[in-house]
Length: 294
Length: 328
Image (cartoon, rainbow over all chains, first blue to last red; front, side, top):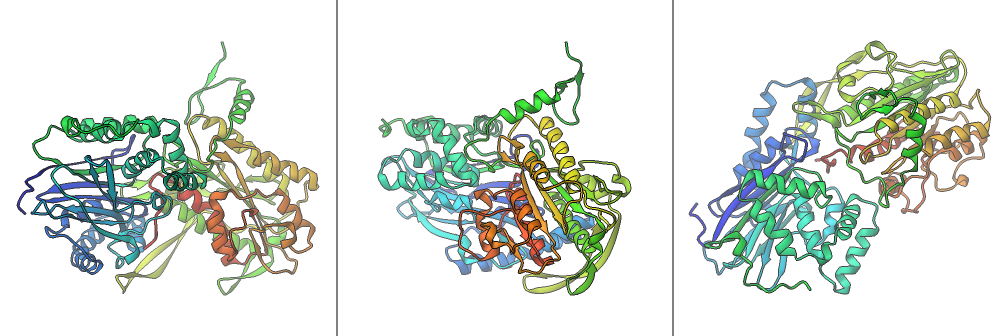
């Protein structure tokens, strides 16, 4: 796959604080950005499945549900054979056979021609995003935060994928755009912090409805609100430090763990892959842009 | 200076300071969005099962199409739930201890006592990894898994930790008080951090023989008043009544139940289910989300009993650190 010309790519993933086993995976290669979030609550070998999924993604974008179904049908069997035959306790094998292995997946394929949009795929609650610094807009496969309140549909080798789990769309890929894929906790951080800055009535009403719900997302949004995220400069205080930290695995980990300790990030494994404008120092990406936050 | 006693897994409790520490724990307010804490190995939750083992549990019922004693059916169901808890904690590198689990039986020798048997005998709380390693017996059955629409046979191991028992009276008050003592100690041990609240499931078929209604209500209130920062301990009562009447799960009002004094008492003893459980309950009982459900079942058949226990446990299980996600 020829490399992308207008963007620099990076990928990082780390286990949650206090854990060493990471069930998320991130990959960037050629024009592909991908993350997968292995589901620890359902099935087993979640991290292995997440790493397998991102490693098997094709060079060419998957742009339909049928394309996803065909791709998955072509890759699941070697994974199944490998872990069915791997020495394991009867309980592990039973869980593997009963529940399979499940993961959310998000990918962006950058276009060869920068005039064209990028192809984005998200299955479950991993997310593809595009930040346009010129207009301070954030496009996403998951514009509605409420999706993080429920149980996502996941990709499992054991069953055919369900159409309702899939979101396919295009994202702007012009040279100034920052494109990202990330697993759910990071997505809630980025999208939640961004949403808090919108003071239009519709956005505020949607957030207010979410905050009234009994789920963990509501508690999390309350924490972001209490921490003053509505007044923070999103790209200078949220996105930019994240991208800077993502240049190095240790910095990435400490950056996320600090935010987790502050309650700004939910404790979870984290995966991020991003495409940054080529030729720009990360710290200079937004220097010329006006600050939209009062 | 006070002598320091090291509690099992938390920071030391000042000697003689248990009641003061408990008082401080219970003075800490519940947060504004309760029942949202993540269950992790460093922030576990707890399950306490109270099982009526009185003589009346010998009565025969039909379970999965076969005649079996109430005690036998309850033992099978509790064993299934224990297996499910272990399964949710199972990772490829072992079983993670997200929960502390206790089983209290009441009836034998007219007292309530911890009901673990075999290698776990005399233990109070045990961990999922201890349960996984210490079972009484295992039954092997052949099951069929569907893999992408293709049936594949394999052997499955059904483990047993609890055996059916049915003898003597019904010291339910003693069981509730034993659970309250146990949970008070658990709260002191877990006084730091944000813990998903413990869940108490009481399965009974008869009237308590060691206390009148006000005493039982007081014992239940003592459990329900306990709380972590994430919410109050929940007490669910499952009434395997011999009285006639349609099964009732998670009633919204006392009038949903037959005019049976014991059923009404158990209703009053039960927790109001928090909002976080409502959607699952509404789906189970096929009603609109009324905004009020009581954690009780009357005359539940085996299937309904399993469903109720699953709702009780699944919400806690769904708060394990990876959040249980959609089944395939």
